[in-house]
Length: 388
Picture 1 (cartoon, rainbow, N blue to C red):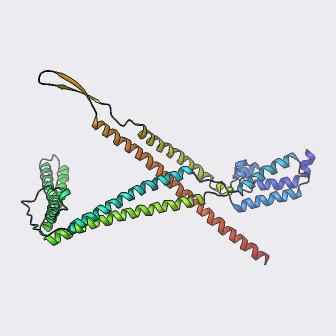
Picture 2: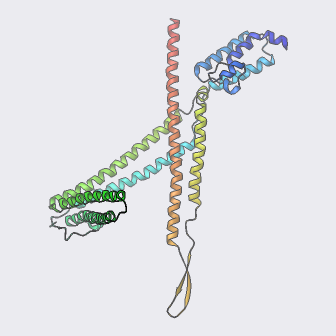
């Protein structure tokens, strides 16, 4: 055995050099001359090619290829080179599912926006069909509240609705002024008094603003009232369409992101070695986040929907008592609300983390792909120039 070591000395030196090729090798390991297998893995294509070249040189100069020490060391390093030069699938169906769920929810919301836009278009058509009428409304005969459901039927109802909004605000401002003025007058310290007077000033400004808005609307004639209503509902149509368009844009972004995520989800082994720390952190974030998402969603899903019935006792005039079992409507409504909130939180965490991790991994994958592509081109160009 000692003789084989002397015979394969040059080959073993080349293998040792190959083992220390990676930039992942720590300073202490280089100093001690002993490197762990985990840190032998190359972190770039250049390091992989260098390690491969050293193995070829060792294979050429080896005098006894059947030596156990040489063969064990060579096979270990050769497996590392082969793994580093292979592509490995890293994309996850779980992250894709999160993005698809988000896209589905956005599609549902987009359809809701389109329905709202169609409804507002119907409101516009309804306003355009108004017939001229008297729209005179004074402060005295203006109501503080008006029915929104009938405000679109004619110009008078629309004006009444708009005026009631500002009259209510103005009167509420006056009440707040009176309240805070009284608190200021009875304040125990100057600091509190100044604070209350600041509120008084703020509400006075709001009061003037709301009364001015009321007066400007009250002065409108039929044509101006109609145009005001048209502007209002046309803005709602535009807003709904804009919201729907934004959601469609984000859906397209998600589809492109998924495609890029899968495309870049086959990195070389040396790229995985380079991003080992990042991948460990992202893997930990994914596990914890998915656990939280499952906890919230599962808790909401398993939570009891219908509250237990209430036992209600009725006492009649003749003294007879009767106990009835009645549904707890308020309790059921509360349970339904909590279920929706918990499941919504779970879905939000699931979708957000999926998209967030996909984005980070895709950006990292694109950077590696670009670096590899341009690096290969530069290498080919350099070799061509060297040959010339």
